[in-house]
Length: 253
Ligand code: HEC
Image (cartoon, rainbow, N blue to C red; front, side, top):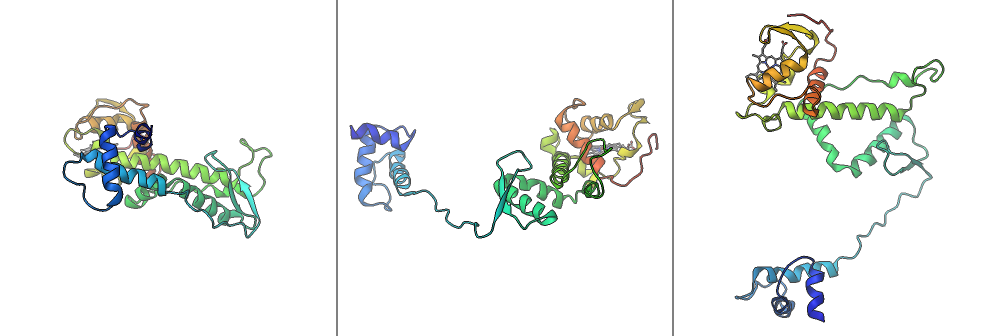
């Protein structure tokens, strides 16, 4: 019954039992040598798979940081709680939490990369909300450092997604490989602060999203977006974020 077990351990590789037996017998003695002539490639690859499975013990995870007292803290994303040193407070604690979160979410690095690559402007600093009396007569009650961090991170991610789309002809669905930044580097001349305003191209009062769609359909040659589509929302967010500090002046030409 040995012949039946081998293919199952290899896991999904469909090979004739005779071929596998031959390969194991021949290659078992000469692990690094090239396969003898006449062996099917699938069978020739099988032995290393078996060998790796057999020779891979659970990875050693010995170093523990239990040399100082720790506290468990809920993660910003509602995931499993993390352990941090009891001595950490304020900014140092936030940095430590963020650091742990980043290590368990390596894919999240794209936000940082997008921020650096395109010099994205940061959202407003809300840490002032933590000072002074909170709670009483405050619309939303008490804020924590964790709230502030979460708001900033989520907002940055939203904006970074818009930046990614703004700079990508593919994500914009352009038929002519044109992206927004080719004419509006860093969202220049998009003037979101002037909306609503009368747009001659459209012959009516337009919102920012109408002009985004105008440019998608005309210079970019892509498909018009629904007003509430995630792509449109992200583009709006990015364009607005890049005009941080510019006073609103609707109707201005
Ligand atoms: C080939 C160059 C080109 C590309 C590519 C382009 N635009 Fe434009 N965009 C223009 C021109 C030209 C105008 C018109 C300016 C005007 O009417 O004042 C404009 C106007 C705008 C406006 C209104 C600006 C204002 O002053 O009110 C917005 C918003 C805008 N574009 C966003 C985008 C977005 C988002 C993209 C990518 C989807 C994009 N544009 C791609 C050339 C381009």
